[in-house]
Image (tube, rainbow, N blue to C red; front, side, top):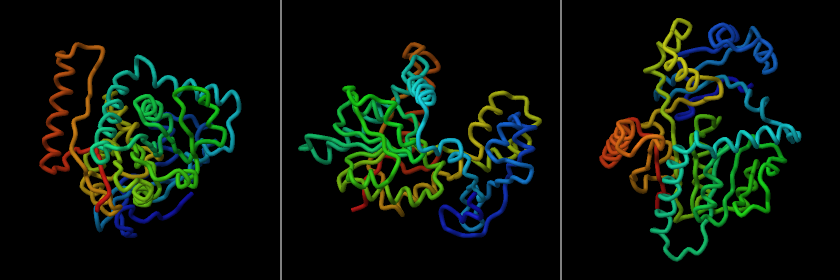
Length: 329
C-alpha cells in the first residue's frame, strides 16, 4: 500500500477527507463477499480515502491500495486464464460493442487526419495505445492504416501476447514495460482512453507520453469526468438509495481502482504542464446503431455532440472529456 500520497496536481500535502472506503462499506453497502475482500487483503482495519486538496481543489485517493496489482500483477497467465481473457477481449467486437466501435473509428480517423495534415509525406504511421487494457483501439488502428501499433498496459502479464496471433493480418504488439516503448519511440499518434483515473502519478504519465510523441505527432486523451462535489452526498448515502441507475453510476465511478478525480479545468493545466496544447476541436461520431438515424435517441446524441463542439471552440471547460493535442512549440 502507498500511504499519504500528495496532491496529484500541485504536490501539496494539505487535504481534507471527503469519503473513506472500508471493509464494512464494501460488504454491507456494495454487497461484496467477505471471501473476495479477504483475498484482496481488505480486512477490518482497511481504509482508503478520497480527499480534496485544500490548495488547488483537486480530488484523489490519498492512501492507495494496490488491489489492481494484486489482481492482475502476475508474471504469466495460465492457459485457462488466457482463454477466459481472450473471450473478454473478443466481447468488445460484438453487437453490444458496435456503438463504441463507431466512436472509436471516429477517434482513429481524426488522429490520422490531424497527423497527415502536419506531415503529408509520411508513408508509414505508428501509434501507441497507452494504458489500454482490453482496448478496441489497437486492432482498429491497425485495420485503419497505422503500420505499427503498440498496446501498453503495465498490468499485462509477460505472456499477454498469446492473446493475439502473430500470424494475423491485424498484428500489433503488447508491451508491459516502458523500456519497450522507449525502444520504439517516437510515435506519430498516442491514444490514452479513460486511463488517467488509474494512474498513481498522472502528471508523470502525461510527461512520459509527451516525451515519446514525435515532434509533429498528435495525442488523444479521453478524460472521464468524475464529479466528486456533485456526487458526494449520494456516495455518503448510498446505502439508502433505491434508484438503480444512480447506484450503478456511483459504483462505476467511485471505487478504489479510480485513484484520481480531476475536473477538466485542472486536467487542462496538467496537460499544458506536460508540454501539450490542444491541436483542434473535432466532432466525434456517436450513434445508437439499433435505432434509425433520426430516432430521438440519436437526435439527442447529435445535439449533445454539437453543443460540446461549440463549447470547445470557445475554450469552455464544461464537461470536456475529449482532447486532441500536440507538443507546445
